[in-house]
Length: 435
Image (cartoon, rainbow, N blue to C red; front, side, top):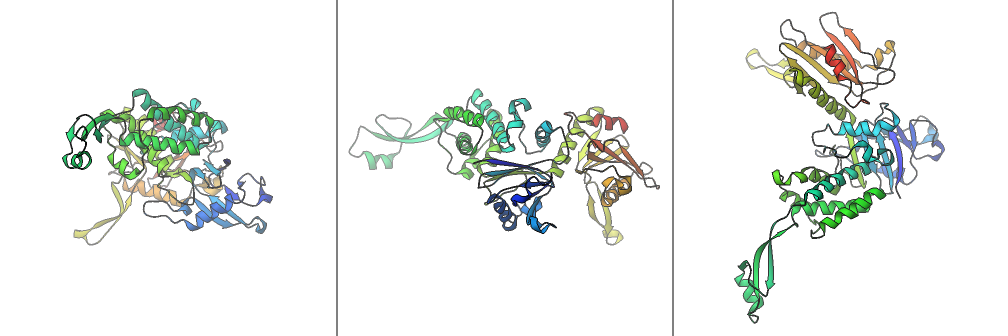
């Protein structure tokens, strides 16, 4: 059973059937799936290597006593697969064309440093008919098809066998043990050129695992076809050992993305370093980090050809110093998302994944802390009389799309620009024309 419940960031989930379809931002997840989700949030604690479940899910009591417990979804997007078979698919809150949301999300994912590039076109993926996990499986199969087309790699593998003819190197002690009375046989070790290497074992193990969990007839068919190319390959039984043997070089380039994806599927891993035993599978992504990464890549692509030097997560300045004059120590490092420089011009750009509101009396929904942050950037990145331009980049919505401008009165100006995420090439060329 694979049943899909689709929610958006900041929506809530209820297990109370009386509240099914009661309001748009409240989704219903039947028993026992809802309690599996609640138990996971309450029991799973993160480590240094893995994110805490409470970073992206929160259990709380509704003000409506009859509603009971609810689970709120924070600003993480992706897919959670519960053991009961139910899937919770979380999509971005910012509105895109409904049929385009998954494609926009996938385009943003490709900006992540460790996220494998996609081969198929959005049309080929048939994203409207697949959940996110099936789309990721489809990507893996695309990489595998390229590998098979180019030919899976073989390597010289040491073999040991008791043969009727001499080959390779005689293993004297073992030969005496087994062949003392059989002078016609030779216990030898020799090298043979075989495809049974670590990379192929991991790919085969991944394909077999995906065959057992996919709910897509298209993906299942492709997996069966691809497995025929790995008939002479054993299945990996020790993932850690085989991954340690993986070697990516010029001759094994086709395996690079496959190995990243194999780790995701074989270890039930996520690109957010999330992992848990209560859930069958989970792939979750912080929208704040995803938006920041996507915009930074687009800024570099658009501004660099014009001579701008683009620095992501710039670390050049601190807010304060402490200590005596001769032993001053910098503290509270400033780290704007993007800094671009050309000649003596510096522009600081910070990304905020937040939906603003068309209400001037409420400062358009912009938080005071964001403005304090921009003010600090303006002062610290100033060089003599040259005050840097400071821009805050929010996602564009139907309600908020025209740039805003704020003046502190003491030399600091903060500009707000809205990035069009629905456009494949965004609208950042318009930003470049304004700077």
